[in-house]
Image 1 (cartoon, rainbow, N blue to C red):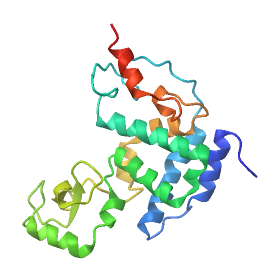
Image 2 (cartoon, helix red, strand yellow):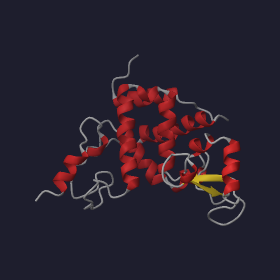
Image 3 (spheres, rainbow, N blue to C red):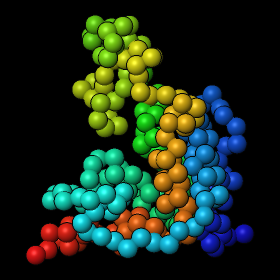
Image 4 (tube, rainbow, N blue to C red):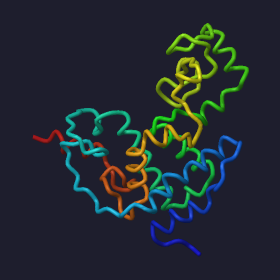
Length: 221
């Protein structure tokens, strides 16, 4: 049966995701994706919010940035995730496992859990060589480094990595309870906007969002 409503499409995506945690890092990412989507199905539907160019389109806080509509990088990344996720749900692309892994990784990153999937792509030998070149010390506490965190982007080049010990590292396994507990508001916002029947914020709709036009309205005389 072909799903018609947006909620039906979200449910079809949920049905396609693993119900149990696996040892495979990619399957762990897909399994974690169930958490925000199950929350999305439970939340009451919201009406769209009227756009206000004097605010950040993602969070609604006052914003007078001249080069970006968003107040910070977190809002830019959140907006992009919601917009791309909703578009993938509508086209059916969200049913592809590689898309699910990508969306799960970005959501986990936004929730403060770091980039466990990207870390898993660093070969053990390369990781050991990098840690040795960094003196084997954690970049935060100076203890013995055993892993890395990404500094800015998802890139695994050494210039974007920071040696860390397990205690200081931001990166946590998908579904780690501490991350889930500490990021409830972030996850609820993402779940609400991804799973809502209609795009809640103007930046949530892939087909209509025009950030340049939004900026022009912000700075119009």
